[in-house]
Image (cartoon, rainbow, N blue to C red; front, side, top):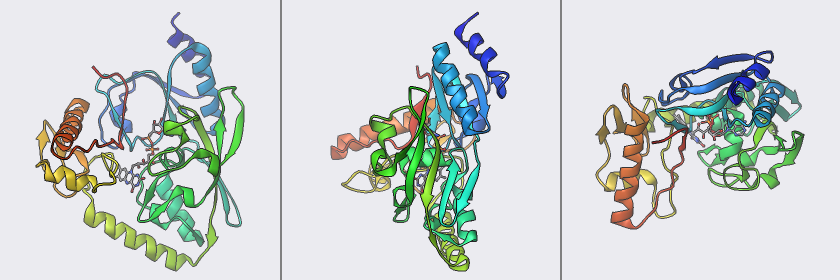
Length: 303
Ligand SMILES: Cc1cc2nc3c(=O)[nH]c(=O)nc-3n(C[C@H](O)[C@H](O)[C@H](O)COP(=O)(O)OP(=O)(O)OC[C@H]3O[C@@H](n4cnc5c(N)ncnc54)[C@H](O)[C@@H]3O)c2cc1C
């Protein structure tokens, strides 16, 4: 019996398991090869149990939110992929606790409708709350750090603990999860502090952000901004300046509408998108001496 077989036997009684699930079905790019083992966690407890079972079996585990900030390799991901669909929400006046697999955009819109202010900027961000914590998701001058009080983290010991937002080191598209002591640890839930507001005003604000997004961003399959904006200039300007707006590689393309969005226009492979990413970085470094840092995370087994 392999370690993967042992893990499958441990997980089967807890929830739905799918061997060899194509990850293209679970990413906003519509790209990605199979996961050896794919497990659906419907609550925070299931997420925690799956992570601990993988650790005990010695199998690597990857937490998948909405797959809106990742480029999964064509060969897929070895080990366990846990699809986080834990979504329970509790509202106590203006303090909200929500599990990390909930949709951030839908949650933000619900809070506007309920007359809780602080998240109108988030109505177009297509990830989970967990992904939003990991990247300190933000748009139009707002970011999660403005409203996050604390997050519930699964520690390597297997114990879950609430950690204050100040200790999560939330910065522009990063946190202690992407580059610090919490690297690769799991966000189980978060607690946000919102403020009372007028639902009509909040929904009107959300609608104006929807309009801005529609006007500026392509509708096709992508993972949002490909690169973080360096201090020198917005990434889209640099990509345009090196002649890559509209450039194609197979079915992958640099969007004509917004050059920092790379889109899958049909059956693009991960290798095609990666080629465009590498090419943009190479040209921009050669022409401007600027090293662009990808915002999209490359995951899985790359050749
Ligand atoms: C059209 C479009 C527009 C976008 N616009 C914006 C924008 O305006 N602002 C912005 O900030 N982002 C934007 N994004 C990017 C993306 O939506 C965010 O980065 C989002 O927060 C990612 O969440 P996710 O659940 O999809 O994470 P995934 O892509 O599923 O995962 C990303 C990483 O986070 C880890 N992770 C996910 N959940 C957890 C968890 N519970 N615990 C620990 N680690 C976890 C994963 O393991 C992986 O390493 C956009 C994306 C798209 C496709």
